[in-house]
Length: 328
Image (tube, rainbow, N blue to C red; front, side, top):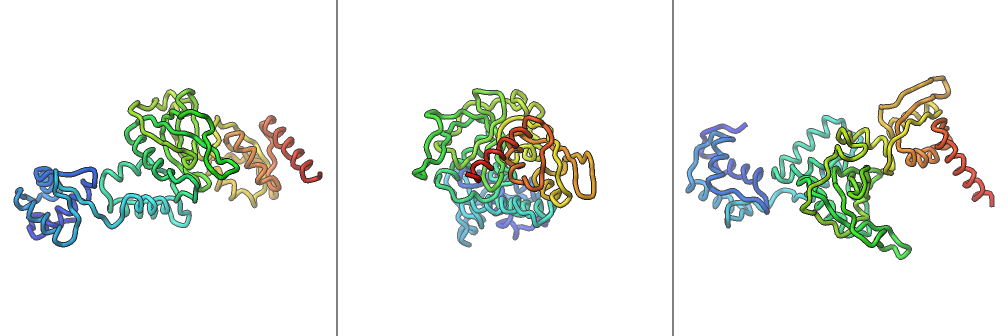
């Protein structure tokens, strides 16, 4: 807490205001600084004092631009570095939720309000894995801006060819309503709506090129199937463990107590235990059917899908195909 009325602190208070309210794209006039000094610290000041103290800060080595208002250009960390640090904290499983929130609050204190407004749309983001898409980080920043402004985006969506280069999946730009950026299995994903349809879609950001923010407003979530009541992110992530699109179904499975901890890691605590024995559990989870198909094959030695029948039959067919391949 700052002491009020102490003129010796004026240059530090002005520096704090410049840190919080300016960046390379946003400046403050002398009059705006005077108002913030009074509002935030009850510190009276005049225009000459503002200019004199800013010049003193420049002499101390702070990079402050004084053309067309005042803006602080240099910081301990730039936006990209802060985003990496915040993402690392969010992804860490070795600290509590409270510790993560406290650390993130300290990191955000090093940035301007404009940066903090952007990162409010980013959830659980680890550092992007190595990718052949050199536009990925620029695309991520554009998507952040579009989500903040509630604008649509356009991009080319690509797959990797045998030449290890990106090739457009379709010879057209996707028009998408962006709602949230998340991470799953070490990859960035955009949760949104492909504007030609009314359901939720997931797009890998490292597969996007030519990402552009459009002037058109996003489609309201309530018009998107599955988002009528907004985006419940923990529930959505638990139901889409591999980020396949499509509705969730109720899945009944048999497993063992030894694997239950892994199941919690994947699906969270919104699991219903139907029957419990010393050596087996019968449980029900809600998950995208295609995602559950791959998950069940991954955990095949420890899990048996009981319902729905269509999923069980699909897995039986998959296992027969695998047996045939490995037997030939």
